[in-house]
Length: 296
Image (cartoon, rainbow, N blue to C red; front, side, top):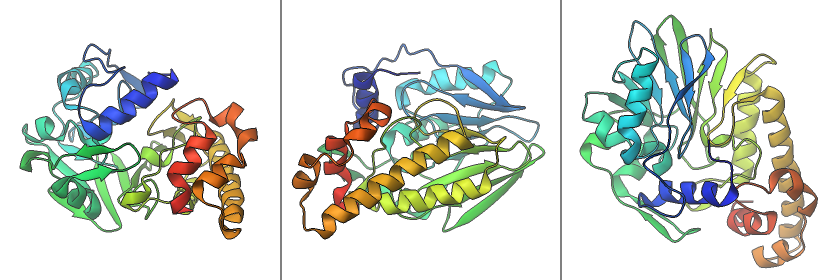
């Protein structure tokens, strides 16, 4: 797993642009790390992948980048899985959907929220990074979409995929394995650092908080939580992260009510006391404020 700030930022940017930048390597080691019986987390470069294997077929959550697809499939085979029967996209960003085309060409049924398919069809421009995501090919598009929730009864478990509106984007979902008591939170959860929020495509800090409250209601103290970025987590870590976002929201909302611009709010350094804990990933708080302020 990538831990250095520069590499993490580069990896996130490549997910938005699908082009090589500093820090990306097709030689990255990809392995499936056990989370629960039949459930694994695949880390590497891009969003963390969830993997569920069993007699009914392989169930995959997100797929990182196209250059890594063969290594991801090798990792799946290494723990007894087969080419995925189902693939869930938690949202449209390229570090979670870059492998769609190659995996879809193998016959995988791709599933997502309605808005994910629309974003992939049209492509997107990520203004925060001045990056363009080109339209996806037909093979890389979800063929089953949903507006709120969808359930899979597979491999002896009930798997719920639940949409949370206007959070990281306008198409986010988290996945709950009921019997295994495992959650894949997608990019609702950047474990240990400030999250990117795509405010130009329906994301908002308030929506992130509401979405996390939904996840927390599902989780208990034994739940294992696969983050979109960062290490495997638990309910306590998720609650701490949600608390940080709540503090940030209240402070930034106050500044906005006072008429402060994003630049003025960042200059006021209202989140400096949080940086030691949360500012060691993608952004320091002043950068983060400028990115998310319009969505407060």
